[in-house]
Length: 244
Image (cartoon, rainbow, N blue to C red; front, side, top):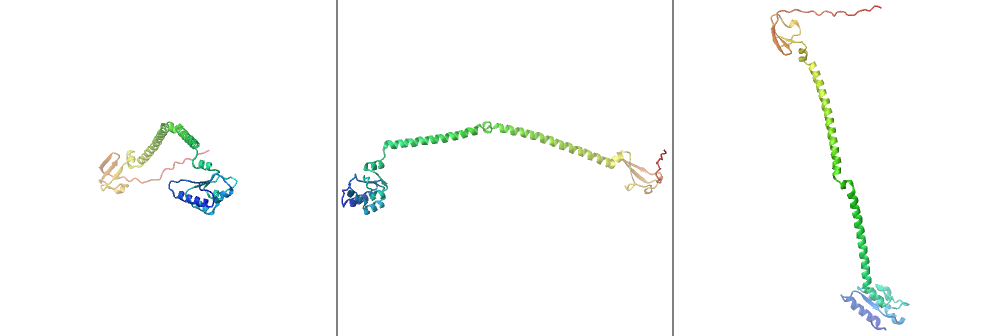
């Protein structure tokens, strides 16, 4: 450490500049083991204060004079109460640091263990659900639903087909009842002349004219031998009077 006196501030600034330019210096400690108030004046020198402020390397002030606080304590990056305290700050106790590392490691382990426990609990909760405990149960339930829906669809389709068949039978019966063939099957026939015209009156044919008779199962060819007009008479009155 430079001696006290008028040259003290200059020597400290020179040393500070030299150490600040050194690439292998991590921290600079400006220390003094006590002294009188006059001995501490160089550490409040304006030029020294500005030099410490410009320094790129961290500076620790360890003047070691508690009653008086030089301006260096205010501008330095860290203030130490004594040079010994500065040494402890710059080079921490190995045992203490190892203890802090151990505590941090235990905290990280506990945090990681807690996170794993929570995740495991979440997985256990998911696996305990019926859908994951036995995935086939959902398929079995859906399979039963599919079978029920299939049977219901078959019954519904069967009913629709039965109604459609009944409707077809009903319409077919009506069509048969209204068809000319059904009329012929009841004993009626259709009389046609030689040209194929339907004969609806005795005036449409003459004696000895060729005619054809359409019956239910075929056609009969014939020749008229005579014509007997049948006048249409009034219907008989079948009303009866009742006498009391």
